Image 1 (cartoon, rainbow, N blue to C red):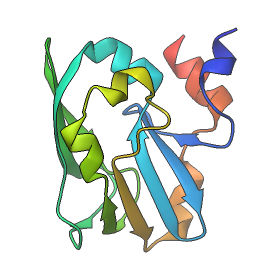
Image 2 (image 1 turned 90 degrees about the vertical axis):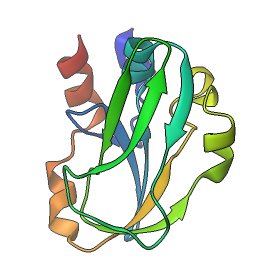
Image 3 (image 1 turned 90 degrees about the horizontal axis):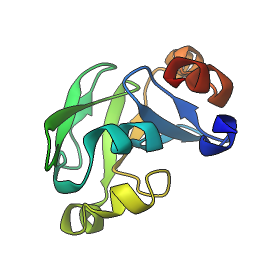
Length: 127
């Protein structure tokens, strides 16, 4: 079933990002649905560590053979980690989207995380 595609320990956004919350740290990537829409990913541009982002801000771009898409911050906070390995091997997003994190944001407003979707809500959105 489609529900199995989206791990229940993750949260999701309407912009097709996933978020793994661990205390005040939010690890962010794009969903299986997003990578399927994009097709083969060839390039990934991510922000510098230390950058501040607000919910809905563009934090980077992902480029596939078909399109260039913007990546949107799911929460407000400071980028404390960036996955530089992924920028060197962006095709990993296609093979393991939910394991291919892009940035970690130190969440400054925990209340915002209540707006994130759970796996069931996200599945409804994409089916």
